[in-house]
Image (cartoon, rainbow, N blue to C red):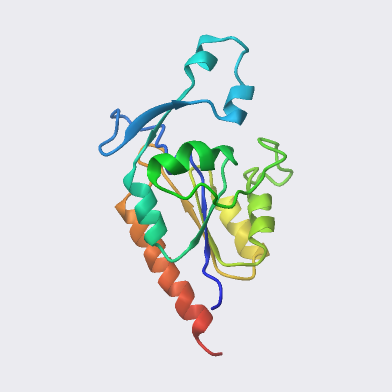
Length: 185
């Protein structure tokens, strides 16, 4: 295999466990930020817009993600803001590739998650893992039918975020894919 598989990262849910019951979760830091898409959806001049969006991030995640045998990219509504507002807090480079979504939150005619078709298009046939809290079984089946190389859609519980079980699964899957693609047929 000449290229490493892609690891496509969502922010809210996997890296920012917005549904966590304990605040802040152990090992996480809190920030208030003004991501472009979120800010555009707020009432101008509102207290909420002035205060910013509260996020919680684990600074150890960056090192763990960089140690995995993947090429990282953002697959999030944060788009380029992720490189500016998320990456530095968790220790990721400020120039990760970004999947640009133009039809955010649009209803898909087949009931897919609105990111799914664009993620497939962007992956362009490369093996990939996509971590997101909104992935459904319908998305998994669609990718299996329309993507000719290995793909793993890893749904993350937004109450927990990325944790040890998910990092172990990412390592296991990367080894499996490497073995599959290097075996002569």
